[in-house]
Amino acid sequence: DALPISGQRLADLSLVVHTDEGLWVHRWTAEGLRQHQPSRDYHNRCRQAGQLRIRRITSAPRDVEEGIEATQNFLDAQDWDRATEIGIGVANFLVQHSTLRRLSFTAQVLSVLPSQHHRYPLFIDHEAQSLVALGFTTQAVVRYLRLIEAFTQRADSQPGRADYQRDL
Image (cartoon, rainbow, N blue to C red; front, top):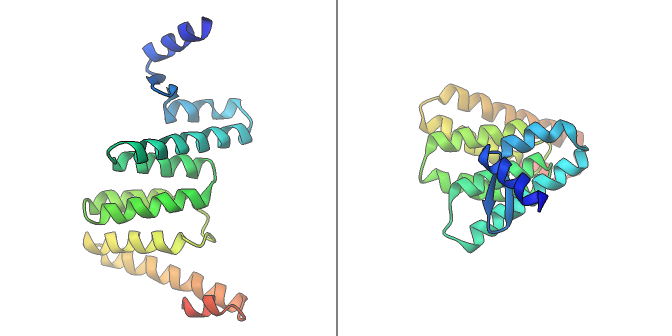
């Protein structure tokens, strides 16, 4: 019974929330505790949080914030493929709903996602399209030029890869 009392005390402090799945730790609390646990444990917890958010998305009316948080959870877990799979869906949704939110979201993903990831260019494209829509054409051109430079370097480093040549 000590756990429920402890859990209630944490809930009273707004550090956790009671859900149907049990106690839910806020992301900022998890980040604060990160330094007190092994990296592997932290990544596993982030992955579990992302999976919980995906279950929420599939079992209830969809909420873009759940998708944004799931993307962040998987980025924190360094599960790049899951993060980008969900993140592209979020970015595509935001195309119709909020250019500024799409710009902010894609910038956050790009700040964490390794530039070598195969979906990285898709987020650059979303970011640049948002910049153009908001009137920041020069910044969009800079983003696209960096992307072309990266594609050129990749194609030059592996001339036998037809897919890399095609991307130029």
